[in-house]
Length: 487
Ligand code: GLN
Image 1 (cartoon, rainbow, N blue to C red):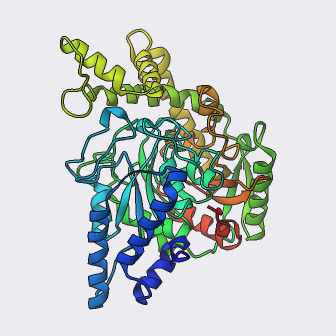
Image 2 (cartoon, rainbow, N blue to C red):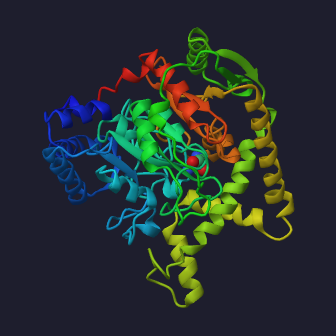
Image 3 (cartoon, helix red, strand yellow):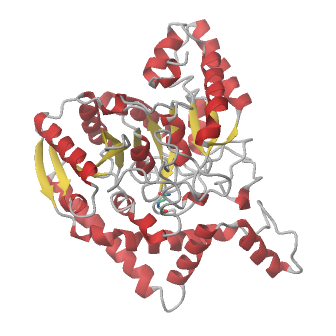
């Protein structure tokens, strides 16, 4: 049983169908694991046992009757605590939403229900998904299962740590500038940010609406493909969702990549990359060559501006999205206000953490009269140029590869007082959000301390099938994903 919770979704499915274990037993075993280990990891903000067991019971009933089951039915999942699930607390790891209970389901949560995927609970994040280490949560820090003195990455640190620490088999996170790919890379698992609009954002607590996407975490590419398939699709509640059919992503995993063109992003392998990371990614490129791909060097000269552009656009959008937390309709309200204005200002001063306040101030400044043209408008123009750089690159190659992050997981506390160095961890990931293209991270090695290294794969918009198959071919030809933390 202990072994089973460390396995992939497809292995667990086999055990369910062969009646070696029931879905209820599997969920109970996960809760036992969470009880034993989560004090060391700190992944979960809250549990929803009743809901999870109810779903598991439905799965068992179907198995008993011999009815057909959706591919991930009964497989335990952890949900990022900025995604609404009816009847559960959705806090965004912020004091301002500490006691907020979701009155409705996010579209992805409904899809999980339709697919009979039990949600174990809600997992920690940087407050409002702002951060790269999960140290910005108002409640607690989450630790990396590979070394609990290190961060799991962020902002979906709880999602990645729960899967990597065997507290869940699958997880959902959100990625605005790398928040799925970075923690996947730091925790040695697979994480996918889909094309902008591929997955509905309805019911996701908005951070920067032109960049946010929900996506899967899993222990292997196949599981990630299955989960992506389950959550993708058009939604009338999200006008930015794409009205296009959803391919059967798992069927695209053929391993056949002969003749594919792999672009190597020159700038992301240049200076500032840790030697172990560089070596692992170069070895991965060699592996692609051995598997029959053609390697092409690609230069994306505007990439160096992506962090600056992102921190103008993301903060501007955040300052607007977060205006709704004023103590009136929902969430925290100060006890001490003498009048309405004081109620607003005190509620926000007491309810938001430092990083969120920093973003609101930066964003408000970028949007203010007289500065709009110099900052926001210019950033939008450069965003367009970055997208066009990618368009040109994808005329020459099928996918682009790079390190997901220039370094492996860092020590807890080492970057928290230096926001700029924290922001720089996103240099590899942010541009995909600016361009709206899909990206993913998968294990490609370990550094001298045994910490996981992630390979990032980017593809043109709606190129998920190609991207996943390229990842699958690499995974099946290597053993990196099989190494697990000893926690
Ligand atoms: N680390 C980036 C930030 O702090 C990205 C966060 C995210 O993708 N949600 O904004």
